[in-house]
Amino acid sequence: MKKLQINVLVIAIGMLFIGILAGYLIFRNDSPSQDEHQHDLTEVNGVWTCSMHPQIRQNEPGSCPICGMDLIPVENEEENLDPMAISMSPTAMQLANVQTAIVGGSDASKSIKLTGKIQSDERKIFTQTTHIPGRIEQLTVNFTGEYISKGQVIAYVYSPELVTAQQELLQAAKIKDSQPQLFQAAKEKLRNWKLSSSQIDQIIESGNLLHNFPINANSSGYVTEKLANAGDYVSLGQPLYTVSDLSKVWVLFDVYESDLNWIKKGDEVEYSVQSIPGKTFSGKISYIDPLIDPSTRVAQARVEVSNSDLSLKPEMFVSGTIKSESKSSNNSMTVPKSAVLWTGKRSVVYVKSSSERGISFNLREVTLGPALGESYVIESGLNEGEEIAINGTFSIDAAAQLAGKPSMMSPDGGAPMTGHDHGNMEGSSMPSSTNLTISENAKKALKPVYDQYLLLKDKLTQDDLEAAKEAASKMDASLKQVNMALFTGESHNLWMGFDSNLKKALQTAQSAKSIEELRKSFQHLSMEMVTMTEQFHAYTGTLYVQHCPMADSNKGADWLSLDQNIVNPYFGQSMLTCGEVTKTLN
Image 1 (cartoon, rainbow, N blue to C red):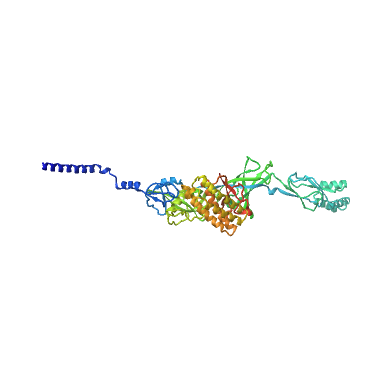
Image 2 (image 1 turned 90 degrees about the vertical axis):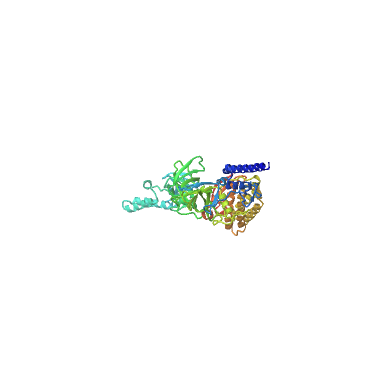
């Protein structure tokens, strides 16, 4: 009996072993691999971080303790082929609204807005003089704007010298048979006074002296200036009127220094006249001044216009547009302005690279050519066919700074950024690559900042250094009162950059020792304010972005204004109306 029990136990153990072995052989291919097991552990026990504040590391999902954004899992970081590049996953690119475009050769064309006036054709302006000295007895043309025809009598002059000359003629006529030469000399003397042969013959036949001699018009046109009155004594050759023939006029456009390279003789101009609404004119530039006016810093471009119906009158205001190609480069490349990050000293773009391991972006310094509205000409630094980021460039640059890779302000790279250290930035570091809407509370908090900025701008237009510095100090104080907790999500990171750059510009402004130094700081301040307004829609109301092409050594500079009329803060009273409105921000 005992032996039977032992046999049964042995059989049971054997069956159990066989079952385990069969199960292993059957199900071993369905068991998770080591890699899959590690992946499961990563999902369960992974690290979670904040996309805006990567120094935050937690082992479970939740909210960022700094900005309140939802935490995201840390992805496995692969080594880049280029250690200086910043890699981005397709998901990250989509979240950052990164868009790219391939650089190609194109004609560097630009649409230039011009303003000017209609003026008389200088070749058709005449001065009507008197050829007889004496006293004006009568003027037949008595007011400016009156039309006169060539040969028309415009005045009568009493001349004692002519009375004497007539008496000599009558005496010479009596002895003309014996003294023909004397007779001819007397007649020639009167001809020199512009008397006609018929008038001389009439004097001889009648024997009566003329006391009031007529002055005939030398040309036809409109009297634009009356220079004499009845009763005036005039000498030989003295002007009586200025006469202009308005059958042809000039349209003179003001051309700034920075635009001269884009305009050449023969270019077509479309223009409108303020006093003739609804009608568009066109013409070709026939002449460009070789000299620049030292007071206005502009040259004038001339368009000659036929004016047979006299609808165009001198001093009328005109505004025109000319589309031209740059003469600086034959094979120009253009990129959108949103693709370029500009520090004031350097201009950079991010070039996209794709490989088996993913997508990465490399910082590339470029040399900018002329601005073409919403794009730049690239003189050097890019090759045709390369792909660059044209939107979301700031997000790429921020990621590069956080990773310690080469970035706009750190071309050689540096230690990864943490916390609220958003870089030691100069100039505008916020390109118009994203558009975020902030809360109404954030807009209210920024209202005093805008008020003091606009006051600072007004004081610069008045050349008031001390009042401008006081406005800069108050703007700085208003900026320090803005609660950064009002900016959440992606706007939080952008705001920290704006806040840092605005404070630096204001510190420089407050220590300025001259109005020129303060205007330089105001330029950087305005760059930040314009970009912040565009990105955050931060101002409740309408602001105008205005541009002076001659500021910053003819590189141009912008500012914000409540009024559409130009009042220039970069030149003040010396050139108050220099500039134009480039954008309207509602």
